Length: 424
Ligand code: GDP
Image (cartoon, rainbow, N blue to C red):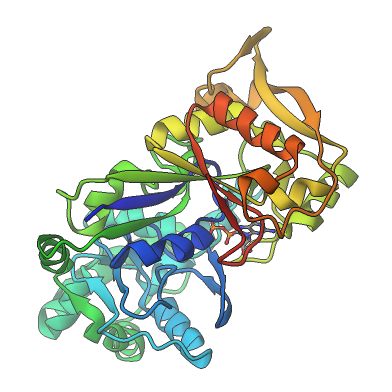
């Protein structure tokens, strides 16, 4: 029995989904422990290409159990849509292979409205929300103004609880934003349409996971987004509204006593970032366009072009430290094959001094990248499967990154397919 967390080291979209898909064969249960539908994992396997936003990335392998833990933002409406989408591609998600924590809180219809209304109010100062309702959801959860999923099992108590929250929430909708209030009938209809669909999946996942560990089963925890978007340790306020770091995995899973034996930090061979906020090593113009095209850097959820740049050693080292990574998976190395030279952001210049330390968020926008470069390899490496077969220049790049970030690069990914991987 060995528990593992797969986490993003940077701003998200590092390729966590493909690593979960690869590593689940060594685990019995995959658990998502935070976040909601505001990010997507892309998995390519023998059944096709899947962009998953809420389901764990291994809803595909037979015999693997999937859990949505207490820490997720449970959006019944979009989860049900996603379950139906994968069903249309031949993947059956049933209460047998998906367990949802009865202690997960519900993302309610007004959370999405409030997200959009607030971004609209902020106009050019907006945070770049995906408008999935995540920030309003988590703030309500911490204000104790939403309901737990398990309340769907007790309809009378649920209605009474919702009626109280409805009255309070309409004050904000109407008086702050001038928006249309909700009625109890709206909520009844929403429960019928979506809550009822999710009800059969609910269970006491703490008990389920405790029992699984007692039987010697191993858990794989799957994060959404990356270290730099973590609410406490990221580039606040351009963070997500939950904790994406590995330390939160046991808490958000429903099994707070779970031990992590391995933390695989996923790092992309270059940088990408969706949404607003400081992104020190950002490229613009043609240079950015070529990298974006080469890497297919368009949001899995929104389709919007991602901001891109070279690898950022300062941010990556910080991300590794936040996660306590034991192993690194370096993904998309194949994407850099077109470059004559591989540019690297090695340090930052901040207020007249060079630094290796990731700055405090308030001064991060003042940082400038200090660049270096290494020779490119200029050949297709997507078919390479062993370390020895990788061109010397590519090996040098991997070893340089490894040295600088202070963590062993165990996996080098050279393509999106399950087997496009070099294990060191
Ligand atoms: P996640 O949210 O961290 O799972 O990342 P995304 O799914 O947003 O982004 C990863 C994208 O890159 C997906 O489209 C993957 O199929 C793809 N991908 C993952 N690893 C590799 C790789 O090594 N090479 C290439 N070319 N694509 C990859």
